[in-house]
Length: 109
Figure 1 (cartoon, rainbow, N blue to C red):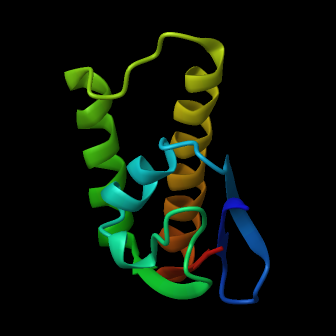
Figure 2 (figure 1 turned 180 degrees about the vertical axis):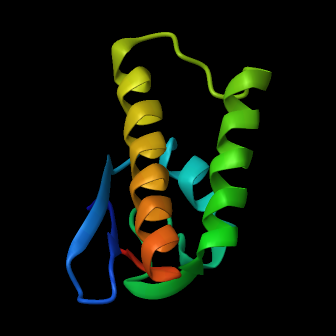
């Protein structure tokens, strides 16, 4: 079990991916900034998809950056540093695609 979250472009090609193992509560940060808590099922995602616009992804990346600046995302070890990086990369890759195509579909597995 775990959270496998993927972003897809209009052609269905995966453009972003984030993996959080079972019990890694850092996954909730990505759900939170995407305002996608309804897709969080505890040990994994719900298996559903949602579409996010360029504006929604800009808001999510901005919210993530605010959390980082406020220190709400603690970084006591390399593991957490990795989660911060993969979350940032996921949001940036989705946003890059949404800027080109207008939207990104995200699968919460």
